[in-house]
Amino acid sequence: MHVKPIRTALFRPKQSLEPFLVDHLPRLHEKDVVVVTSKIVALAQGRVVPNGAGAKEEWIRRESERVISTPWCALTLKDSHWCPNAGIDESNADGSLILWPRDPFGVARRLRRKLMRHYRIQHLGVLITDSRIFPLRVGVTGVALGYAGFHGLRDYRGTLDLFGRALMMTQTNIADALATAAVLVMGEGEEQTPLAVIRRAPIEFCNKVDPSELRMDPQQDLFAPVFRADK
Image 1 (tube, rainbow, N blue to C red):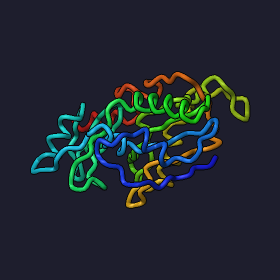
Image 2: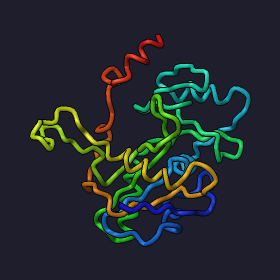
Image 3: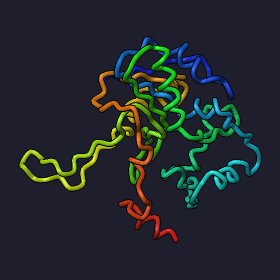
Image 4: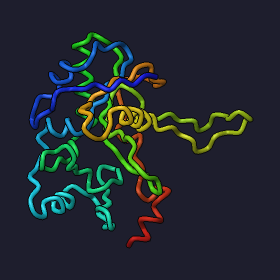
């Protein structure tokens, strides 16, 4: 698998996303995956708000399903993700606040359709990424906010391991794994690489994605006892 970050011009609020991708992407091939950072998706949607006194705290409340105060940030539940501050970003925002994009699965689906038509290809993946943290681990990795064109989950349950033991629980999160690989090379600072192309990814392409396939009921989450202890 090869992941190539794409350096671009600066993306502006309410700029059209599809022409920007076509202007900066290389010639796409069958079974490529186009990676788009959620920040430019949010900018294209105009999800930018002023950062005045108390504005961030107010937007965190508006954007979150649940908020847990911590000494470092607000730990929030939003769109089935536990994330800091409802995903609201101040980095590379020129003094404003950038919210998470709306309907990232829909965005990925529409971009995929347009890019397939433009490049005249039949198999293409589109992945919308952001960064996330893990419990008891330092630093961020990638996360898939939305995707289209490939299955985001590989299910090993019912198959056998090397010694013939049936696997009962194992499933591989393909979408987040691809997001992590892409975010690693796209960077988090001043790289100005909001796009990437993944080639030869070991994934199964498809025309229809189930947006709920990676979602979990918070009550079934392994870390649920930790969050319940906060109450």
